[in-house]
Length: 464
Image (cartoon, rainbow, N blue to C red):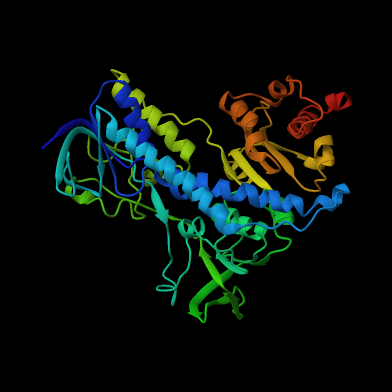
């Protein structure tokens, strides 16, 4: 039975650790049951953004008339586009696997890992042991138990990113970031999209930001909020989804394609964790302590399967911490997460970091709420934007930034300035000391900061 310094289960976040261990001269096993690179590369953030970007280009082409430009009706070769996306991700994934298969200190195992003891894992015919084991198996789409759904050709995000034909009509069940990103992309290409929402869109975001998002996102789409899906039927190449409103009114929606985007499920259920004594939460996520250690010493979990944050950038942070704490440091320190930003790559984009206004109010904090609209700056006017918002949550006593929430063009990039400010406990006065390029989108952040300063010290209003 081969023995390793570390066994890594999962080649998303696990690959980052494997690469570092190789550089440090440590011997490790990397196990992957699917394509190398994990969810982000193969069926998540990278292929979705490669689909979303051209959808946005098509949407912008449809607005050329607003800039006095005449052009033909845009069209897309959807099959060729998706084939090129999949070719890129598959080639990149194959390259990752090949590099590890050639590596001297990394043993790459293709197959499903299952624990047989606290320090032993079975992969096919191979039984491995290690001093430390890291579980980084990620998550997969959650499929609800809807009557009639099983056995129909519905899509999850995985199939939606590999579909070779553009449906004329699409029903999307769900209103989270995966639902709006993929549903919005299909709508951008010209599909008639209907959203069925249990509550509303992006319920974890600041409500004011969601309201502004909906104002720009909903036109051209059919949206049913506060709706329960009661059944699904598929006949004659048509989906018929039965629904019920909050008032009990029944109705049916029809389309030739159905996307189920109702959340994710952690990939912990096939690892036989009970053989190692690792405890699992009722939702399937693996609880970890402040050192990313599970209930069993020497076994760790990070990324989606641990359930703390469901972002690729968060698992990257956790992987770097794990190497620092459990390989480089003689005395590990607990993990300390800086403010964790997130973004939704829709049209318009949404980005956030820190406390929302309702969270601050629930904590009993005395806060100033500052705002600025995108159309208040020249770049938004130049691009013909009639929507967009920056909202800041600021501590009244100290002027320190507690949260930032954006909806609008380039929000995923714009949030980085405010993430840095929040990470370094900056005040709005600190942020305002910077000079902002004119005319550029970050001026809308400056305008929100000005609004905060005006509220904190009305005497300074004469400066703006």
